[in-house]
Amino acid sequence: MKIAIIGAGAAGSICAIELKRRIPSAEVDVYEAGKRPLAKVAITGGGRCNLTNSFEGIRSLGEAYPRGEKLMKRLFRNFGHAETLRWFEDEGIRFVLQEDHCYFPASQDAMEIVNMLCLRMRQEGVRIHTGHKVSTIGREETQGYVLSFEDKPDAFADIAVVATGGCQSKSSQNMLEALGLEIVPPVPSLFSFNISDRELTALMGTVVEEASVTFAGTGFSGKGPLLITHWGLSGPAILKLSSHAARHLADKAWKGRLLVNWTGMNEQELRPMLGTLASAQSHKKISNTHPDTIPVRLWEHILRKAGAREDLRWNELGTKGLNRLVNTLLNDEYEVTGKSRFKEEFVTCGGIALQNLNPSTLETKTSPGLYFAGEVTDVDAITGGFNLQAAWTMGYTVARAIEAKAKAYSVLPG
Image (cartoon, rainbow, N blue to C red; front, side, top):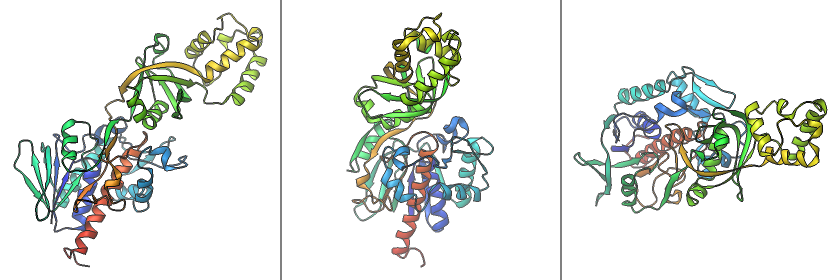
């Protein structure tokens, strides 16, 4: 059995290793367009590799997976985050769990993951071909698939697994469209926001640990730490919002009105807190006394937007002044003028529509022996290790499904 895996990323690598262990007699070839395998894994988590998440605090998978929730719920029954951790621990990797529920290798070095996966592929007898960019995947008249490359001889495979990652380039989209499968147009799904307000961007480097952001007129929101940058706003709260609102924002050319709640509280919580602060500091200037969760420079910015004078004292604020301050803290409005890439990481929503695939095996319904795994499908997640977890799970699922197919066709004993 000849098996071709297109893409040497997270999904393709774990799939290749599992296939050789499950079907030792199979010839497994991995074709990678880039110069080296797992290049994206090497930069995830700021170069530390946020391998997965504990899923604590995730009430429903839809919170983590804006697209693909039902599919991932099904696949996690066989290979979820606990099974992923055991798989890597069996390969000698040790982990640390952060307060934000993210798992990283104890070494804090993504290259430990990259090097281990590359070594295991070589040890298992997987052949890795870098610099092999597939241009088309053709179906043979009898059975199997022909892979055509841009500048290399064609290759034949009985089974093909597409694990190319997000459909960022037009050439990768053309390759998929030639298969006659429905494709959801890909758009970016993890990015920070450009905001032209110079008073805000002058506060670059300021972090609010618990904030919430919402696009006006929509139900899209995000909560968590918020970072002010020299171009606008970033941080987990923004990235969660960008993930859930990805397609809406693409339709709006990444523009809109952003409402920022700098406190993470609701009005019923905020008013008593400010009342207590005002009573305790009644004769002090408002600019000199601020909530502990809001840095001084940001507090001064908020006071200016609320129309409060610098020399104003708490006992001089009055009801109208308090209402303006509460509204600014809860609904501070900014105009988003575009998007910025989040570090070197790039995630897309869109790709192969899930209705093309058998949800248990990820094999295409119309082309037997053709499988898809990872971000090339219309599955993506918020930041925090969830995207890598989907890749590990889908790569493992495909290997398991191909083993079952091989047994059914008597390629394997049992």
